[in-house]
Picture (cartoon, rainbow, N blue to C red):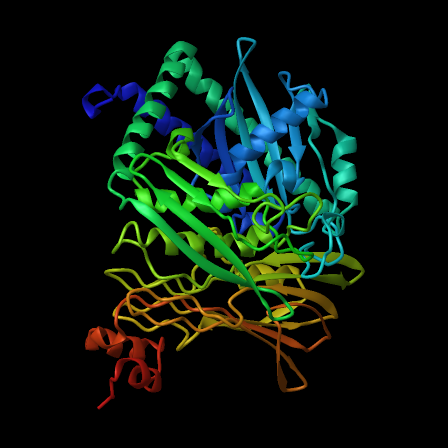
Length: 554
């Protein structure tokens, strides 16, 4: 299909679907209760046709979005198998990661949409709930041995029937968490987002008729396929292999291996040789692994390529069953969604760097730097979750970005004012981490320093990566600085593991220093005015400049 034959109405429908997805996300954010959704926007929304093919998605969280189609297909299949009706007026909830994808904190709600009595599609969203029970506040531990220790497991079940909430479903879910009121608010916000999506989708269909709408869907899917075909032909053909590593809390490496085959009209990705599943929560369900593939492929193809079912129709992914990238139920998976997904993205970018030379950046800080905390304050149970930004990798023509969420996450930071107003925490530092960037002709981005003081006794869990091995550079660029975590008690600073659960007493301070991005190109070729600017801005010190660039301040 040529550009000249592309019907304008098809593009209007495609853009309309994208806007509906975005409006769903806005409705969810605006009506949610938790800072994690309202402030950090840790949620995603998408629209599918009656065959569970992705039609459009909002620009939300890559690890959510890539797994939504896989999860929707599994949920629909489970509903059919268990005789759970998908009739008009229902909505289904599920957080079992082996069905819906990602991890237990991510709760998926789907709503079948009917037009004139005919199923025409699904609207769906996924949101990260700050606590779903389990052994630690925030539900993401570093040592759970099985999924059952990570929180309440909800297989597909009705949360709405005949357009009314199923109150027992809401109560069962909420009563198994540390923050039931917040959970109920967020669940209702998710339902509201789907109601908005359904209403807008039907308005779009009614405006053009179902026949025109269906023709538009097939038209823009075919158009997307042709664009992807053309882009794949620009990749260097060959077989490219790479390895990267996760860090076990006990210090040993967990290898992830990939074999990328590019043959001109399709891409095969095989993870044979990747480490078997482990008895800690670093396993990533297959939906998460797919998310990494889809995110990296989309980045390689270009941001002008529409994102829908056809975008990924020419990629084949194989991950051995029982591996850390395709574990067997009920292996623990809470951290696989947040940390293993990041390492998978780095691994894939490294492999694709051989096929698209000069277009792939160096590695990012490679961690979501998860902090889960909670306790009892003034007689009320509380739980809080946040991720922290890193430095992104240096790029072929530009420096990396400082203190930003990268790759599989796309959240905002939680404002300090919001946290201090609602939780027993006082922030001490929040700033760019100097000298953390990987040196290069184009340096990596700097990580950040974030430190808070406990105003009451609390439990905090840190789940981060890059604790001993910094983000890799490309084309002569250097590694970024690794992650460091400290506890300051009675004025004494003690370094702790980047994967740990700790008790903080009133007055204790936790400080996390996140990893910088890798550098790109020979550091000695860096423009001296850029070095001077980095020193002036406090991103690097004169000592760093002399060590990595051979630059001495006058």
